[in-house]
Length: 629
Image (cartoon, rainbow, N blue to C red; front, side, top):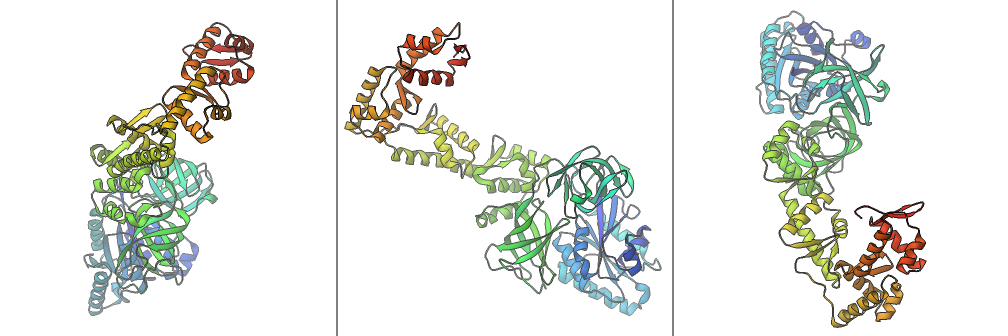
């Protein structure tokens, strides 16, 4: 599997980026007639760079004019090495500084400075420009470790040294994992006769193969990969860090814009809210304020967003801070992604940072310690912190690579050996969430028993519903089973109670319960209605309901309908009679009425109950016994 390296140009307008790329590769990257006529790069261009770098490599040429910085940002996505071009006759200029700042914010650590147009200056001037360039690198990056190579794209002087410097820088670039989730931010989309929709971009991660079905987000679109090309050559598969063109089937080019993302299998979904660690570079003339509207550049997308800083006091020049970005349109992101922020007006680069949470909850400020573990800790720390942030709702296995920023194969290894997280169903929970859920079940039961002292149990459904805001149903069921195994609770059918709990009836209620049982026993299969029952034993309806529920919980009575209760012994005799009559033939209601001695008023609810519990099934000819019912 091939893995590539992307070299991106940077530098001020008219400092010779495009001519230097042409001298290195022989490729003209200005694609538009307007670009060639004006001698000004407007949009991003591409060329193969295998002749310069040992690995499979490409170069992205970006515009230097300040009016086209957003195009430069789209081209900088996925860049591993910055080729910073500085004209020897002018030295560092505003876009030189902005492009270096952007490279820093995007996490581009490897770089080479091409001091171009040396044929236009003398040695003394060249030395002054070299010193000024080194000082700018130190101020903007905190170091001046990038080699500065004297070169002339016009005469060819220094090109060999520049190729060597790029080769060394590329050899130290981070190699992306071909087994990771596939993602490619799209920077161009167009139609080609015979090929259909074609999209291009730099593959960020993972591998794509001809014939695979990809998702296109935002927009919830699907498309099949008809063919793949890398710098004009057909491929069956393409790995990460490579300039790629895909012919897609099933999607219209008009629906795919710059900013869309091609995605392989995974739990990808657009986010409208990002938890981030902001950085405002030293020397910035503006700070990022709480509540400020700002432009967010992530991948090839550009959206407006509102900044919510953790301390509500903004982030000043040279500072860092946690924040949430509320996006006005959804973006496809993953933890660890780098982004750039530019002011809404005037449009200038002010900062950037790293994504550390996807769609964080309202109480996100309490989670920033975990965000630090995700970004700065070990892979184990990142997985545990991502799971912990999900709390009692849990984090699906397929979500962890996105929320921890780690390849799925690596995530599987980490989960397998981790003692800090527990799998329940298809999701993972940290120990604190499991313990908190168990404590919440016990607290819920204590409160329920106190509120309903005459009840012997709380329904399991009521427990699930009462805790559903904080905990998933799977987690509640898991901790209930654990508590039952530990002897802390007792589960009896649909009910649950604290171990040792008994209904707390006063003396008059105990007597009322005895009276109720006597009335129901005497009534057999024709019990009085609840109002008549209440009158018969001299209690109000609320107490009657509690006493009936208590008989059901103790297994002494059966609830046939909300208004009909039978003693268990009577129900069992009726069940046996019905089963016996219908064991060999379909029996009409009249035969049951005669055998049971009931009026239609009491017979029909009883027969429908027997259908519900599986004793009988209804046919056009009558009811027949279910085998094993």
